Length: 427
Image 1 (cartoon, rainbow, N blue to C red):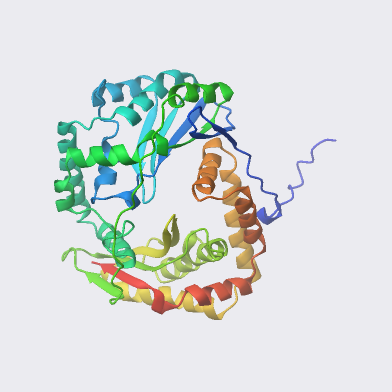
Image 2: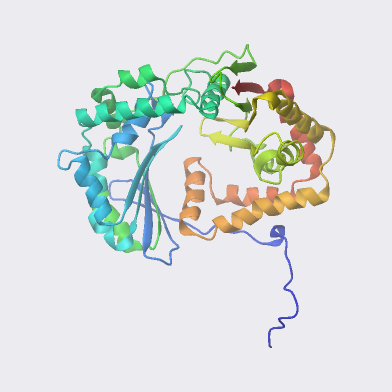
């Protein structure tokens, strides 16, 4: 049957599609380390992640998690930082190391055919990093310089203060970099944190791309032969935050013309039943370019170039943050409109057309995520690190498709009480 090019194809809403997360394989290396792998590649490329409990949640000394991650590939007993970086460049590979709130992640991007040459180098970095004294001093100088530059930016200062206000300055999620903390770091601090938290026994390995059992066997040959001795993982100590003051104003630049606004509250993480439907409500409220906040505060009032609301679920808690930058003269007006939009959602039902638009936006983005091996791996990583199975993903799809306007209104009434929010304004 010939294709009729005079007739437009049928348009389907994203809510009409079925969504299935491609399955992931799980195996154990000879020494018991878990490996999750996904063969979903077309091109000869692969991503390998090593996840360690080495984020800020485990710091015994401020700033040590970021410093350890930043210096991990800057020297072993066999290779200097220059030699390691030259080897990565020679193979056209990338090795990224990042410490987040809960975990530290070592990520290798490479052509699959180069794994036999690159995996031994990663193993050496994980098991034999030396943190040379001169590298530590260079890192500290650079970190202090970056901090001094960033402290001149009102949005950077606002991000620091809102986390500290929500969680407390001693809490791992609320702690922020200070010059004196960076200056106080020593090589021994980094070595201690490295030995305790980058111990191979604590690792979980994830990989996706053009990969097969052959590459899994290679990972086993390199990472599965080490005898593992798991050290105790100790979390950071912290005190409860002082929530006596709800509003903080910081004068950061007397000559500045812009103000940074952060309005936030604590919010449950992914394990709470309200989290998934709140993803829908948050998207409608401020989670995409067509949101209520954008339509009002950017398009109608012209107070800002962009305003967003985001959920930040962590392993041990979470938050909801509205963030924007406006002219100094309209800061108060912008805050007033944020609370106005909360009140509207509490008092009025969302109409069917807007709710369908938001659902299609959410699910349409999910379709894109399920198209590539690396984004699929990221979804599996999130599920596994949070202790979830595929059923959690399926339940989210069901909620995104079926949540009603009335359910969203009840959710707004529960979580958009203006008295529960904290404000930071930096000008």
